[in-house]
Length: 243
Image (cartoon, rainbow, N blue to C red; front, side):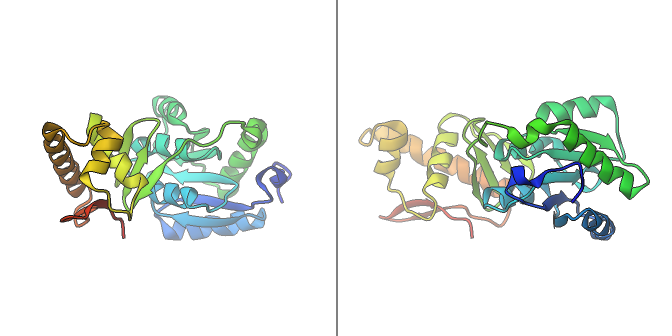
C-alpha cells in the first residue's frame, strides 16, 4: 500500500471508483493502480457512479476523467451530496476558471493530465496526503433518492435525469419525491393529497394533483425516453416504478 494513504480510515477499503468511458485507457491505468495495491471499479458516467455509491458499494476515493465524461459540472454537486469521499478530477482541457468551478461544485482536486501515468497517480496520492481532513469528515452524506435514471436531492430540491437537471417546481417536486420515497407502493389520490397537500377532499386540489402528475410524467418521459416511471392503475392509485 502506498505510504501516502492509511486505509484504516476507510474500513480498509482499497478500491477506487473510476469514472472513465475509455475502456482501453482505464485498463492501462488499472495496471498502475494495482502496482500501488489499489483495485478499481470503472463506470461510464458520474450518474452510474452515484448509483453505485448510494446502493452501498465501498470505495476509498473517486477519480474522474473529464475528457470522457459528459455533463460533469451538472452532476458533480449531486455526487458531492451523495458521498464524503474525495473526488479527484483529471482533464486535458485545464484552465483555472474550470478548476474553480469544479472545486465550488464539490471536487477536491481538478488537475491537468500528465503524459506519465505514474505522475498522475502520485498526484492523486499526494493530494490525499495533503488533505487528511478527507478521512475524518464529520458530516454525513445528504440523503438522495434514486430510481432508474432519476436522481433526486431533497436538500437541494433538485432532480438529475441522465446527466441533465430537470426543473420540477413547487408541488411537482413534492409529489415526485413522495412517489419516489414510496416507490413500488401504489398511493391513492387521497393519500397523496393528505400527505402532500394536507387536504384530501377539495375537488380543486384533486384536479391540481391530476395536472401536477401529468406534468411530472411529461417531463420524465422527455428526459428519459422509453421509461414510464409513474404508473397509474384505476381504483388503485399511482406508483413510481423503475425497472
